[in-house]
Image 1: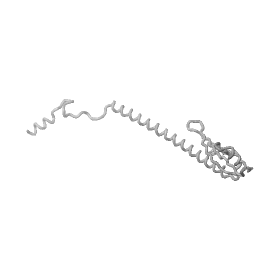
Image 2: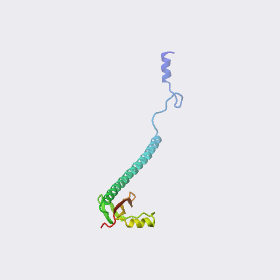
Image 3: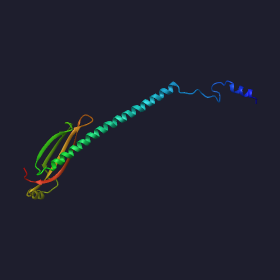
Image 4: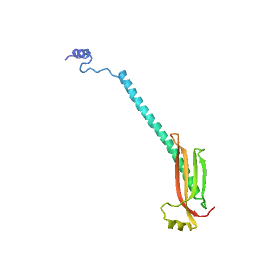
Length: 158
């Protein structure tokens, strides 16, 4: 084949759609719009996911603070010597958390009358020490976290 016939074959125009002819490159307007719609849906879902996670972190932070305040109030009330029946309260975190502690006599419910009479004669008794913390809920209401322990103390301490 001569050089002239090869060049002529290369210059020959081929109709679109004929085999061996590349299609025009690029995306159509419809393909670009569909891609933007999919991208915006994914972006919206991720935004909702992250905002929900931030709300959960905030709720967990409030709950952790309430637990710390309850533990502190319970430890303070339970370590008071001598234990006496009392109720105390206060606030923490600029008034966001309200706490209350109570020290009250405690009698187990599953003891018999003979054991109850025997314990009445003893100079010591059981006290139930409770601490309750009320704090704001993420949904707008309030939540309460309570801790309790049992201590032994003198029967007639005043």
